[in-house]
Length: 215
Image (cartoon, rainbow, N blue to C red; front, side, top):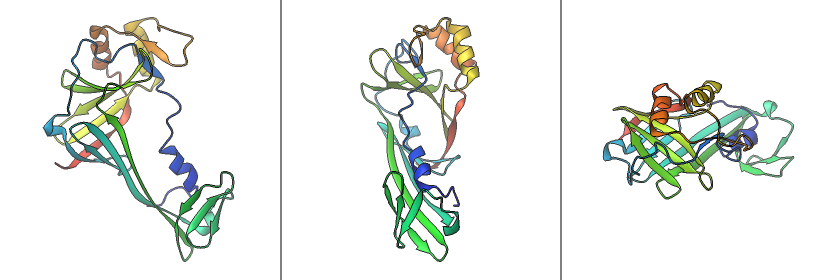
């Protein structure tokens, strides 16, 4: 797999989480639904991402994502912000960060493995369901929840979020005034009917699909 020569920048993209959710809700969604304590048995298993070949594992309580791949670039394409120390270490000149690599002839190889439990059912990670769709609720402080929709078929899982301008327009037209216009995030308090209408209008538009590879 040939990717960008700037290994440090690419690896950092996998861990960016400081930007916040962008859109939050006053309560876990959909409101009025009971919390689900476990992922159903038929959902559990391993899934392959269509976008980056990472593996999503669904257990009874969690969604766990594993990245395991090799990045390769030519020595001559190495950017000026990085330098090699022998044939085994790549060093960032700006941060001092070090990565273990293998150098073979004129190519640099980085084997990258990362495991991220991005959702685990708990008081701050609430799973709910409505009309055959699951909703992942993440607490971001008091009365502030980020929500993703998980749509399931027999062989695939799609996890999508609210991220486009069209999504925001739909929220504003269905729910009305944003609760706190001074907050950095757009904050809403929909009724159950309003949230259902938003979902029905394909209000969650940004995301990716995972294909089941193992039960």
